[in-house]
Image 1 (cartoon, rainbow, N blue to C red):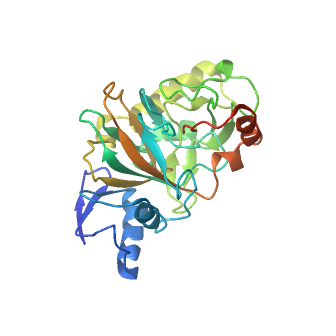
Image 2 (tube, rainbow, N blue to C red):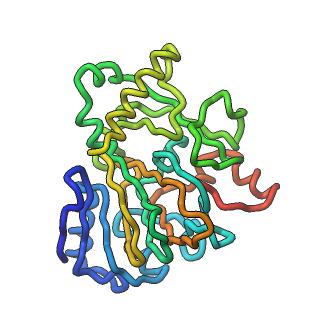
Length: 286
């Protein structure tokens, strides 16, 4: 196994390992250590099946059953594909619930040029906050929300846009969140799902969020991953946020998706499962 740093901010490329085969205990322990410290692992040039992808992700935590054998699809050609089209603003999956998803993995099956995934390091951003900005957010919390009816990724969700109920889940998290596994401090506000800082004048909240996002999404804190067929990427969904520019139109794009989490959106959003049963199933965006 060989490990190479991708960027100074975060992430490592792991080569010399065949993910179509079961890993040994020493390899699994080494990968868990890298995952906890680096937040993002890239395994290029892999040729794996569904079971292989799930087996890899179980190295890092419990795997959700989101589709066939635990694998879902980010796809614009499959009927069951998640988020098939359009831009995705920066976000952390399930931030609008009590327990955000712990990790995510994508495996590139069919990827066109010009459709990267962007990652922002929220743990590094927390550590780099200027003292004055840190003092302004210490002890503060922010409201996160999402629209499960529309499931658009190219808007910033606000309370005035959404009704109350299971289709508009929302949750309040500390702005400086402690990672549930590592204990690291995370700057937990996002471009897509953060409405406001609670118990603060709206204008002051908006000004503060603008300054926080400037630290979070500054160029040196963002890794742009240009996909190649066979890439497997596993990342910490609490420590990192992800985004996507508008994909090329009418060009097939499909990636396996595995979620590392204790709970699904159906566990975390009361009433959502009943809503889907009444109207018929559809893929659920994150």
